[in-house]
Length: 121
Image (cartoon, rainbow, N blue to C red):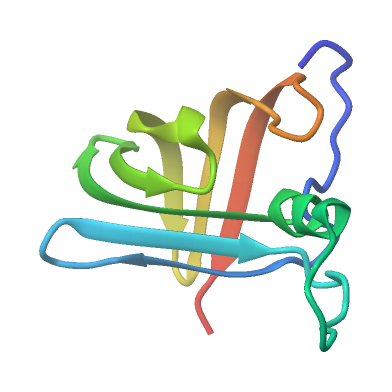
């Protein structure tokens, strides 16, 4: 937020999934497409940290209030996301955009505004 710079936190074309279920539950997981390749031995501490930095994932209950979705997070890769996350969104045809949500980047510690775009295939 400080610099106004826009970056792709998980690369130019991350792969992910977000699902909203009628029962009021949701899940999201997004991964950097160019993650480190698989290997046949244990990951080093550095590699494990890189793998964690190259993803996001959480599960929650949700409710819609106007143009905002409120996720009541039960579990997340980022413990700072526990509790209520309120996110503005737009939904047009097969495109969901969740944006304008302030947060702290877990990799850099900088204050950021997240924007995620999902397209249904």
